[in-house]
Amino acid sequence: MNLDQLNVFLVVSRHLHFSRAADELYITQPAVSAAVAKLEAEFGVRLFHRIGRRVELTDAGRFLVIEGTRLSEQVHQLERRLLEFNALKRGALTIGASFTVGNYWLPAALKRFHDSHPAIEVQCGLGNAEQVLDGTGKGEFDLGFVSGSAVHGLPGSLEGEQVGTERLQVVVAPGHPWYGRERLLPGELAESSWILRERGSGARQMFEAGLARTGVALESLPVALVLNSSEMVKTIVLNGAGAAALPESMVRHEIALKLLWPVRVEQLEMEEPILMIRHPQRHQSRLLEAFEQAVRG
Image (cartoon, rainbow, N blue to C red; front, top):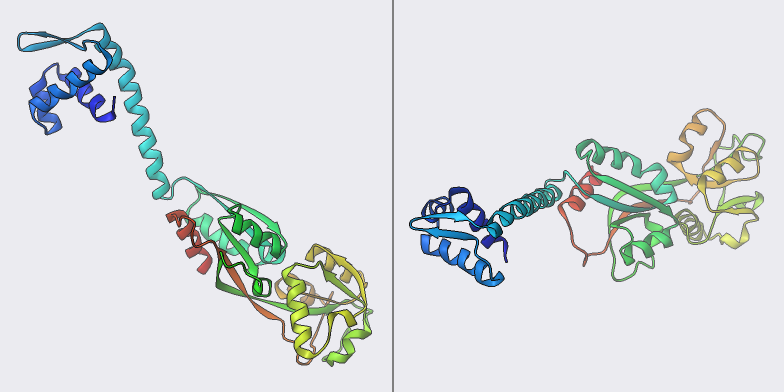
């Protein structure tokens, strides 16, 4: 049985007349008769009694009307729900983001998307940059978001698009020798203990790359702690443990309240693009396209 045959049968059962069913279906009366006859032959049952020019349902026919109508309604409901995906009224996305990008840059894009498509569920997983790239490559994430410093080793199966920028700011708390200083030379950076993010994080890679451009090696800095959360790094610095390079968006409020001091270091530039990472060979649904558009603003 196929759905076309079932539909023909249901129309005939409603009219109890082959010609009227043919008129409704916009096909010939012989085509209607052939579809019903094929159903009967396939299952070895009679669906209609042919009495002169009129027809009546048999027991098997009445059974098929009940169950076939239920099945037809389920198919139509299934079709409507599938169409809802295309109309962006149903669906889910899984996004991966590095900690800093996910906590401080991505929320604005998530809100824009939710305002336009409130029925779509978006799940966002955070990890360091290497974890986000790996998850995007394996299909665990539909899209990944990391800072540009993290993609020096971008796998060939992935592609990135710049959708924003991220800048690190060296900060210290009151009581630190650099608090209130307007400018430092790169050579002075080794005079403070440092709180760093873990290896593989975008912030760590960005800081290391910025230092390298000034001729300072990360290994030359006295490191007090290595943590896997920028929020933890900020809290430790606020308690006077040393200096750190943190995203400007994360420390803007503390700087305004003078809880942290922004240290300007000559030649030390730490601005990187924020990249949206995708796997070009995976299906680009309308849902994914809509989210990408929200990210671009």
